[in-house]
Amino acid sequence: MYSNILVAIDGSRVSDAALDHAVRLARDQHARLHVIHVVDIMGMPWADIANVSPMDMLRLYRQQGEAILGRAMALAKHAGLKATSTLLETEIVGTRVAEMLAHQAEAVSADLVVLGSHGHRGLSRLFLGSVAEGTARLCGSPVLIVHRVRLGANEPAPADNQTTA
Image (cartoon, rainbow, N blue to C red; front, side, top):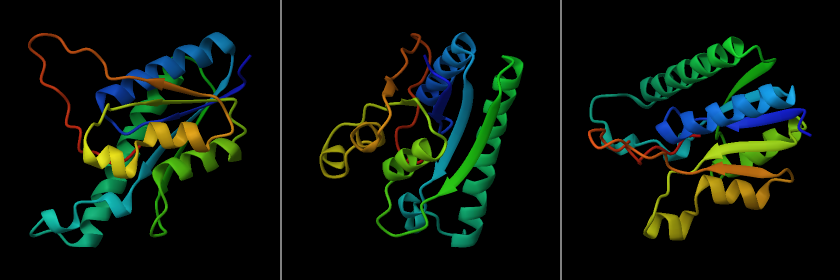
């Protein structure tokens, strides 16, 4: 049924759950897995970091993205999958992560896009929309959204302030 599955990851727990689900689907369907991480340059906390230059911040985000993709590729390899990874950046002002994911899904001929939903609420979601919702609206392929994972009694909640995918 599926031959190309794209999964967007950002290193969060819900993203890890989406990756696990995509790996299982790809293995069961004998599909190729395309793993993507988008560094949202416009969403970076430029003003929040006092002693870090913008270039150092960007370099750090790129390194984190490569590490996230590296762990995902190791998981895919362990599962015996054919897989690719891509690190993208929102280079143009106004480009949304959801637009980039929809474009990448088309570029790899994905028949399914898998991503996690952090479950953001409030004004930021009202004005900006979520990456998951935006991708589902813009993407020509079916989108499978994996919702927030349940936490054990002693586990802290993950930070919900990430804007990368």
